[in-house]
Amino acid sequence: MLRLHSHPFSTFGRRVQIALKEKSIPCEQVFVDLATRKHREPEYLALNPYSRVPTLTDGNLVLFESTSILNYLEARFPEPALVPSDAKGRALVDMHMKLCDLQFTRQAGTIIFPKRFLPKERWDEKLFAQMRTDVDKHLAILDRQLGDNQYVVGNKYSLVEVCYAPFMAFLELIEVTPPPRIAEWGRRILSRPSANS
Image 1 (cartoon, one colour):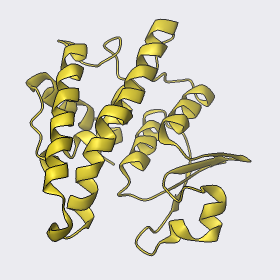
Image 2 (cartoon, helix red, strand yellow):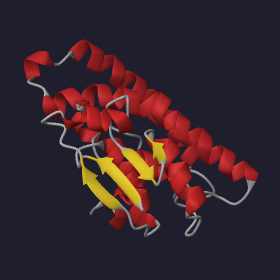
Image 3 (spheres, helix red, strand yellow):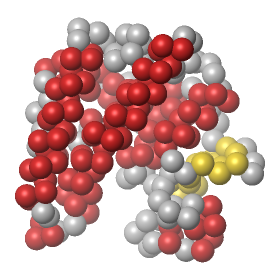
Image 4 (tube, rainbow, N blue to C red):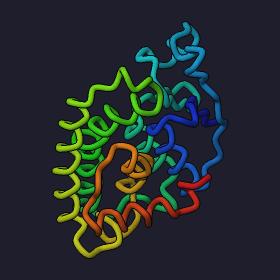
């Protein structure tokens, strides 16, 4: 039985939730109370030594990195497919998933976490400004990749969109105005039922 250990506020956990819903995969939800630091307790650390969420267990398999979890779910439950069937398409999806984390989610998260959970006097506005510059640059590059398509790879909804969706919901919070095509793409992927439940 699949078990997902996560918290509703986790953007990375939301990725996995979206994929589970898109693929109609049954999975037991295990709430990890971050506010009371349950993720720092020995029982959880035995599963995830990095004390983060999400963590997926499937029998004796334990995965605690969201893109690895997404790839595992895709391999184990291939239908409906969230990656193309051809090698070129799969490579492009993999590239964009990695670029999402390297060039977007780390920078966005540097702003999102303090703004959601810390008092304003603890915000680092200078750092926020640098992170916004990086996000703007990345979204401009992604805009060229997207072009006039509905979706980034093969013009089909894929794990690329699954990775981006939870973070696109916070563009206003991080005070970034995306290019118009990226804004429309963001609205499109956030309007899916899987992103709204």
